[in-house]
Amino acid sequence: MSNSFVLKGCIAFSDSSKSIVTFNKGYVVSVDGVCQGAFPDLPERYNNLPLVDYGNKLIIPGMTDLHVHAPQYTFRGIGMDKELLDWLNIYTFPEEAKYSDMDYATKAYTYFSEDLRRCFTTRAVVFATIHNDATIELMNQLEKTGVITYVGKVNMDRNGGKNLEEENAQTSLQATIQWLDEIEGKYKNTKPIITPRFIPSCSDELMKGLGALSKERGLRIQSHLSENKSEIAWVQELVPQSSCYANAYEMFDAMGSKEYPTIMAHCVYSDRLEMQILKKHGVFIAHCADSNMNLTSGIAPVRRFLDLGINVGLGTDVSAGSSLNMVKTMLITLQASKMYYRLVDTDVKPLTFEEVFYLATEGGGKYFGKVGSFKAGYDFDAVVIDDSKMFSMRDMSVRERIERMCYNDADAIIKDKYVQGNRIFTKIE
Ligand code: GUN
Ligand code: FE
Image 1 (tube, protein in one colour):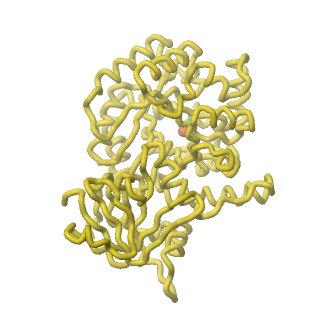
Image 2 (tube, helix red, strand yellow):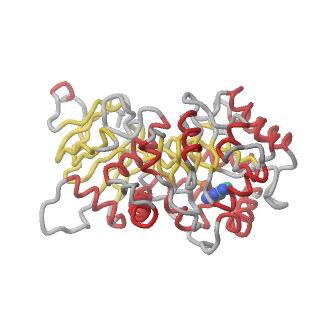
Image 3 (spheres, rainbow, N blue to C red):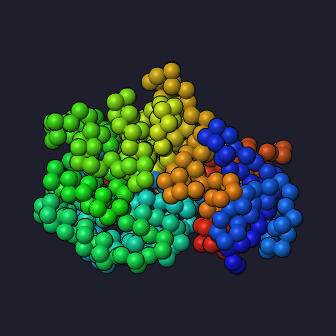
């Protein structure tokens, strides 16, 4: 099938963070992989395009996972009894150290890539490990899935233990340049991103070098920010001249710009000052509610980020988050925000379903450009969902059905998935 076609079905997409547009048995049109809009009746000018009738199935925009660690996928769901710093040292760093072995990396990344292809995610921003060869293997595999990604070879020149540490700032920078040179021009769907793990993993010299490299090559940066109180206190000791954790990244020129936005995962404890810094640079916050629950980190004040006009999307943060399922991530985001309102601050109203649907689709999609909606001009990324296993005693509206899918994700079966008008997954019956 070419990437010019019409899909017919039960359509839902965000037209803003506050509202979802739905069409029961409506039409959504792709021309050369670009969405022409969604319609209750098919405009005549599209009559000659091939049409796929999905009947009563749901058709929604693809979702963006703004923060996920590929090498942690195969140990998801175990080792959930520790908080961040112990979790990293005891479980995560020893696991990531295994990616120096290419047999191990190839096998594990095959599982990750295949499952990413099958889930609700059409775009993802991914951490690999410090190892160049394994990172390139991951990029090769992701390229084949058709999912559009940014992938980062991780930088760490301190506090990783003896098996997950680069020798010094210079060797880490050289390895990064070598990695970038090796993959230059190799992929269509897979882009590199500079990835200092977080301040405790990177010396001042390395951070400065990575900030400069990103500017020099016009590359984006991803990292972690203000996830856990012990982590934040440690950063203050490591960079005592900084006024806050975000300012430490700012000092090293790692906060990016509106043109090349940085992604910061978590921001659970970001205060007003830190939020102002994030806004000033156009940073995207990857909100990772599942991870923040599992590692007993806390709950990020997402409503405050939105009120300030800061860019926000959702991240699974596998494997601190236990699943690649973005619909499950939406549910945990909703539940976390309800508890933040109830237990932490009654001035911060819970996120609405509309807002969380927006965050999972267009909120994170914006990082990739015009992505995450069926408005005209957006990339045609779509997921077709069969929810017929969820019996109801009455007719449900499309809006009710997508809310029900979120609260009951196990019975939402992905039928087809499209990225830029290419069908990259279809469920064999
Ligand atoms: N901070 C630094 N590294 C990590 C990681 O791998 N996962 C999470 N959740 N936080 C981090
Ligand atoms: Fe993370």
